[in-house]
Structures are given as structure tokens and as C-alpha cells.
Length: 84
Image (cartoon, rainbow, N blue to C red; front, side, top):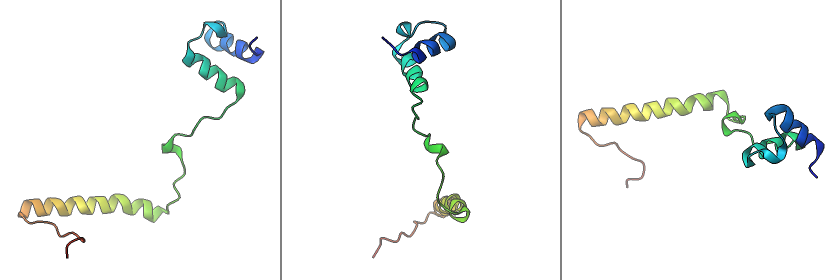
């Protein structure tokens, strides 16, 4: 027999018995009833970089984009660090 919290949650939240739920609904009820933590969304993870480092990445990306546009307009080729 299924544990009481699962049945209660199914009834309270979805208005039906646990056995009548879809697999996805059961999974959600299981997570809640077992108080199982889910994985944190990568966007919510703490970024260990300093403020300056976080600010530098988009600034560097913009600098590179602007340099490439300039080369395109001038008809020149960008110099890369891997050339002899």
C-alpha cells in the first residue's frame, strides 16, 4: 500500500487518488512527499567569478565583435595569435 502522504498530497493538490495520476504527476507528488531536493537550475548557481571578471567577459566579446566588423568593412583579415 502507498504511503499516506502521497495519497493526501494527490487528493489535496490534484483532486484524485495517487493511482489515477500520470507518471509525471506521480513523480512530482513523490518529490514533494519525500522532500527530495531537485537539481538547481544552472542559471541560479552562484558565479564564483569576481564582479570585474563577470563584467570583462561581455566587454571582451563586444571588443572582438567590433574588431571583426572593422576588418570586414576595411576588407582586411584579423590577425590571430596562432600564426607563425
